[in-house]
Length: 430
Image (cartoon, rainbow, N blue to C red; front, side, top):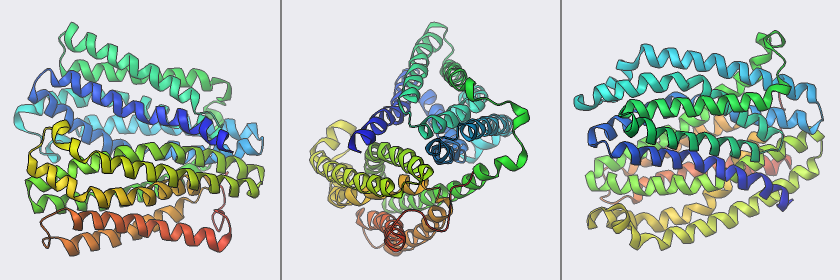
């Protein structure tokens, strides 16, 4: 079992880490153009992260549906679900492109883009929007391959498209002198190359448009709404936490940003285990082997706990490095270091929770995750606002985050203990 988990989780970690890495490289390239260009890129990063947040169900929803069919050795259903996901990806991608292009100025205005950066931000957005269908094809294809117990193929494609992006940045930004427009063009080319590569690999399972009926898309769209609610609830709680830190002062919100980004980066490591959970739980439920499902849950929980403890120790060790690495003032570093013990203590809880998310997603418990996340978000926001204005450090802010994790963990434990399995009222949609 450990070998199966590692076989799925290690390549998944590479795939998950590749996108933040290439974003960092993009930032380094554009940063050489000046502060205004970097500001334009930062604004667009916010636009596209929000724009595509709604569509991550194309991976999270597709993985368990295909894994269930794969476990039943139902290759016809695998092909049908793959085709449905790709058709939906293209349709939603074209819609996203239209919305981004038509409302480009409004999007930038809402995010209060500085006047001096507006034109460059607008240029980047209008070019980058052309990649929306490619991004969603890549997202759906990732889910399709994960469901087929293959995380190595997505890693190869991701590394290839990111390499193309880096080369394109160097040529178009500096060689052709296109500035931020060159950065956007390089990204569009790289993402379409990745999408076409995935489509070529999935071609044997393509059934054609005539095989897709409107009602066939209901399971994926239902999963999409639930996953959107779940993700939106979590973002709401974390946004309120950031706003609370901002009300403490500039130094506090700067320290919070550093700690939050480190926390999110560490969460990425555990997400690889969650991907393995989605794939394996979906597969064994498809096979009807709940004994193996229980073994997967047990081993993944152990992996999550061990990972969380290791990440906690790493967090405690990096305290002295914050000031020199991030170049912040002693005041900002002190505020960040002051809250690190609490954030470190959250790592084992968070790691097991994130693994649990993967397990419940693998069981297609989408509504369960949506409802429990929404309730947990309300509780977290209430606690965060209770501490608001009563402390001059970040402890109250991160107690609110702690409540978010705890209130999400409790229903998972109770549900599993009550039913003796991740399977309850919700059954995999096919």
